[in-house]
Each structure stands twice: as structure tokens, then as C-alpha cells.
Image 1 (tube, protein in one colour):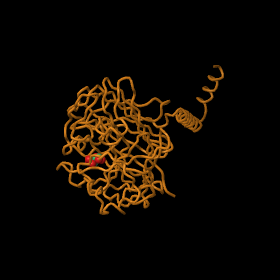
Image 2 (cartoon, helix red, strand yellow; image 1 turned 90 degrees about the vertical axis):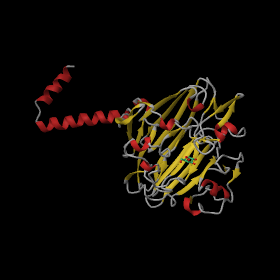
Image 3 (cartoon, protein in one colour; image 1 turned 180 degrees about the horizontal axis):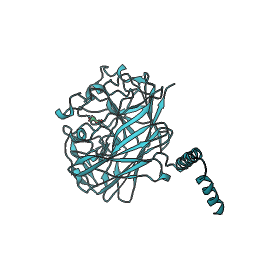
Length: 392
Ligand code: GLA
């Protein structure tokens, strides 16, 4: 203590420049210590608007390379993700809007967390444990992405992670029993975490009070050029899948797991999206392009590679790993470029591509597909990691 006081006195009488340097040193030391403790980039929170349900906030995660992810409590939506190109230039690579308003006008799930059942349920109904359930048909005869007001249109609670848990935010939504016709009160968490190796992790966990189908996915539309007016047809895509689930005319899987070999669905080696999207193929015609679920090759349970996307001009590359069994690869076929105010998608045709890691569509009606039923006492857990890379 005496030595400490002595030092303090010395500093107090030291020349001004020395005092300044010392102060700078102390600040730097504190920052380094915080970095070591994992709190180098405090999570920023700001108000983002209001809906009839209440206030919406937006959270910003950043890392040492300037990678930045912004996530809104409305839909636990990934609003933007800044990624470096091969010259280190940071640009936003997910389609989204600067303000909340367009999201409230019913845009096609940009960056949103979709549920309670991501993707389609045939004829808006299913039977579980001998009981029939009727849902809203919001996509022709089918239910799409949870119904009229899925998880993408709800305000989630948010809580920044502790320094020990990493650089991220945990979003929570409690979906009431009977909401959109689904049984059981479901408590669902969506956790976003960004590390200094440029990996953005999205983890879903959930518990329920009664058995329910559950399928959760993030619906980000990527455009690695960083320019949302440019088509994604020149992006190169690799999908780690030997099979896909062909669909009927309403985009419901027929139940077949079809080999991709010899079809425009073979992305086991990198192909540009545009190279085969216009091929005379019944499945491409039904999807108006690619809008299908690929059955991921899973050498072992746990995380495995789902997809790699590269954009040759900027050198931006995205690797997707997941615990989920499938990925819906959607090439923005329904995007129309009309203004959001006029009921349009706001972005032009095929200016975004989606890699919705998920369970297979219509699993509740497809006994041969992996089960999507969550029962009380069990915890649902699925994780996807988006890794931002650059080509040399
Ligand atoms: C999913 C579906 C598509 C489309 C988009 C939203 O990707 O599979 O058919 O509905 O969502 O427009």
C-alpha cells in the first residue's frame, strides 16, 4: 500500500506528457485485459422502432476484423452482416433494411428466424399422437414458415451474453399453446455469437409443455458481392449432399430422396448458380429455379459441412456448417424488385440466395423423414455456423 501511494505521488508530480502516456498505457492495459476476458467488443444495443406489440431493439456484434452482425428483436432477425473482401473491404452481405418499417409490411423473411415450423406443411394440417391439427394455409394450400404470424413476426426478448459465454446475444420467445394452431407452450432461444475468427454461430434451443412439431431456420438472403442490386447467378455454390427431396407442384416433398447425380441439383463440386438454373428440368420448373431441400451428407452426428458459397470477383466466401439434417437452397425466385410499400420484395429477382439449414419440409406428414416432434422433458438443440472467408 505504501509503495502504491508513493507511486501515485510520483505520478502526480510528473510532467504532463508522462502523465498522459501513463494514462494511455492504463487504458490500453484495461482493453487488453478485457479482450483476454472475451469482452473486447461490447455488444451494443439501440432502440429500432415500435410495433403494436411493443418496442423493438437492435443489437450489434463486432469483432477484431471489423466483422459486424446486427440482429433485431423483431423476428430475431439478422438485419446485416459486414464481411471483408480480398482487399479487406467490408460490405453487408445479407439483404435487409435500415429501418423496421419494411419488415412490418410482410417482406419474404429477410434474415428472420422462422418457426414454429420452418418451410412447408402440406395442406396446412398434421396428425400427432392420434390428434388432428389444422393450421393456417398461407402458401397456396400449405402452411409456410409457421403460418400467418410465425416467429419472424414476433418480438423476442434479448439478453447479451456474459463475457465468459462470448460475444453475442440470446433471444427468447415464448410461443403460447395453440398459437398458429400448434400444440404446447414452446420456449425457444436463438443465440447469435460472433468470434474473432469470423464465425457467426446461430444456435436454437427449445422446450415445450406438450408434444409439437418444431423446425427452426434462419432465412438470411446472401449476396456476397455486397451490392444488393447484383444478381447472385455468378456465385459459385457447393452443397455437401448426394441427395435432395424432389417436390410436387406446390413444393411439398414427394417423400423420395433422389440422387443428385446427373441432374442440375448436383452441387457436390462448385458450380455457378446460373450455369444450370434454366435447364429443362421438371424440378427446376416446379421451384421456378432452386427452391429445394438437400439431404446433407452426415459422416457422423453433430456439426458437418453443408455448403460453401464463393463470389469470385470480390473473393468473399461463406462456409456453412450445421447439426441440421437438411438445407433449403433457395435462389430468390419469387423476388420481384417491386417496392415493399406496393407489396413487393424490395430487392430484384435473384439478388439473394438462402441456405436455410433445417429439418426436411413437411416432416410432420412424412413418416420416412427424420422426426421433428419435440416432447416435454426433452430439449431441442440445433446449431449452424456461418464462417466468413476470403479467396486468395
Ligand atoms: C422459402 C421457401 C420459398 C419462399 C421463400 C420466401 O425459402 O422455400 O419457396 O417461400 O421461403 O419467399
